[in-house]
Each structure stands twice: as structure tokens, then as C-alpha cells.
Image 1: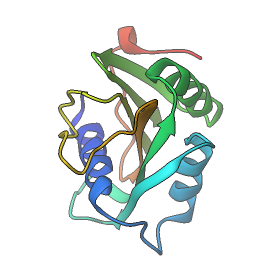
Image 2: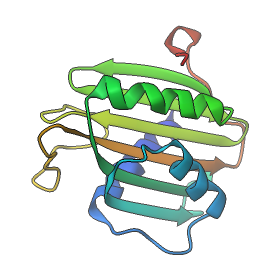
Image 3: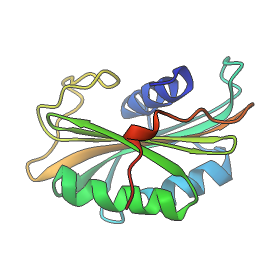
Amino acid sequence: MSRSIAALAWLAAASLLTGCAPGANDELRSLVDEIAPADRKTVGCEWESNWGSADVKSYYGCAWYVPGTIARVGRPLVSRAIAEGFTVYCDGGAKTFEIAGVQGQKALAVEVLADGFVSSEIVAADDVDIPPGHVLVAIGAAELNARAPGRHPSSRCVA
């Protein structure tokens, strides 16, 4: 995972511990809202502008509990990211599904996690108590100072 995309996923994970922040980049907030599932319960949101990285101008991310399974929730997220014009890369493991998207100077990081997940970016803690029949969805979007890096073509996914 590239350093910028990894930072986005880490910030999305950090959003689990915060409340929704006012004053976020409206374009990034709209993008996250467009991609997010409609049926969701907010865990938290976070925004940052020029948060100290030479690579990232602005970031917005949220996490939600969403009813369903990784497959039922994850597939539409891929479709919506593609519909928003992102080139999308996917990876998955036991109880996890990760999506990375790139579009010019925008980057997208999405994780869909089932109860008992193991993630390199989000640590399962007492704060992450996924309700039965739900998954945790974390979406972060960033505006970068340079073109967003892609991934190896073999990890590209389609809707």
C-alpha cells in the first residue's frame, strides 16, 4: 500500500475515536457521503487540512456501522467509487475488504470489516464493537499535492 493511501486508511481508523467535525472540505465530504452506504449508523468523522504531510492538502473520513455482510456492503462501494470516476484497486482477507481509489490528485481509502477482523490499519479495540449482523465501514478521501499513486494492475477491481 502506498504511503499516502496508508496514511488515509490510518486517518480513517482514527475517525473511530472522534465526533463529526465541522468545517471539512465540502468536496471531500460530499465524495465520502456519495460513496457511503445509505443505511448506516455513524461511529465518527474527521477532517484535516494540511495536517503536516507534504503529500496531503486536505482529508475527510468517516466510519459507520452498516447492516449486512462484507460482500453485500462492499460491492456497491466499489460501484459507487467507479461511478465517481476513480480507478479502483481491491484487496481482501479474513473478515476484511479494502478498496483504494485514485483520480488525479484525489485518493480514496475504504475498509469494510466484519466482527473479529484483523487489519493493519485499524486495531480492534473495546471502542470497535460491531453489532451482530453489521460490518464496520471506514471511508477516507484526500486531496493530494501531486497525482495520486496507483497500485499494481493485478489488484484493480471492477464493479
